Image (tube, rainbow, N blue to C red):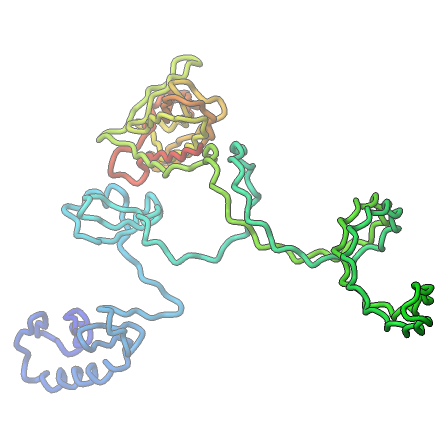
Length: 432
């Protein structure tokens, strides 16, 4: 786009008594040809500049601006300079546009305007948490925590079924023979065998003379016939009593172990032991209120604590537990006498100061006499018994140092109000 001032300078030597401005006034005919010549030269040199526009976007330092950018600035030795304002100038802007960006020279930081919250947001402070990134690689395992108390032993499970018998071991050497037992009683007499066949009859002696005479002498015994066949054996007699056992033989070597039997069925589950340590979800509390809590300069050495708005949490515990508490925020001076003031923060449990949980910060004015916001943070691990307990964050004005004129006594804001970057926050984690 042409700028009238540039054309005025370019055509000064041709203007003479003719006025040239924006929009163009009528030129004298005597200089018209020279004006056309100068304009032609200007248009011929335009491509040498590093400004390029196409597709409704502009590139500076590049002839191919990115299609997604309305303005693409490219340089290897220069940057972009946004408007630089003091804090007072920035906050005096009337109805800033959403996303308006400036550089605050007092605070040394970029700020943009959020019309939803009607507040300036510092780019030097952490913004809202973005979406959770992908799971990172597992870290090195930490040291194992102490084991929880062992629960009572559950009743024994039912015995499993017996395993299959292993193979028999090698037979031991035979023991010595026992002494013979007494003879058993004789068995019953066997049945008599069948009678043998009669022998052949001997020859009859000769008859005596005279008829039948007296009986003659008996002839000799005939030869005994052969013995008859053996009769059937009689039934066996009853077995006699067993003899006494002989002495036990020496034990043979043990056989190889049999294969392990199958596992028995699982026994019934024993009762559940007492619960180990269990962590609750983290509870996060944010201070509230429209005005900061202002504390006056303390009298003498007495420090009076005041609870930060909303930074209190009450819990009822059914077992001894540990409460992990942490809090952070910012503080500032309420007046400005070029002094240095001290703000002190502490953790209170059930209304009593926890002695090992204190932090003190100093607050000074800068060379321009403007207040500074000073960050503070505090944390503690509390071991508590069963019952109801209250944890809270308190702050106090802890005195200060005089300025060059010997003035002391500036007041202190111990808590930034709602909607500001330094608004105080308390986080609670409880483990049993």
